[in-house]
Amino acid sequence: MNDTNATIAKGLVWTVQPLADAAILQQLTDLAAKCYRKVPGKGPLAAGLGNACLLALAQNGLPGVSA
Image (cartoon, rainbow, N blue to C red; front, side):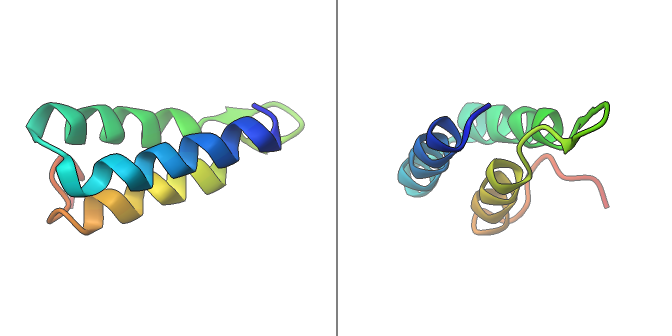
C-alpha cells in the first residue's frame, strides 16, 4: 500500500467511525489485524492505517478487540 492510498483509507476510517454499527466495527477490527501483518523485509503492511482503525475502535468502546 502506498502512502497516498493509506492516507485516503485513514480518512475513510475516520469518516465512518461516528456512524459505525456492529458490522462496520467488525470490518475495522479485521482491517486493523491485516494492517499489522508483517511484510518480509519491510515490517507491518500499513501501521498508520492500523492505528486509525484502533483509534476508531477505541472511540466506540473497543468492540472486537481482545483483552
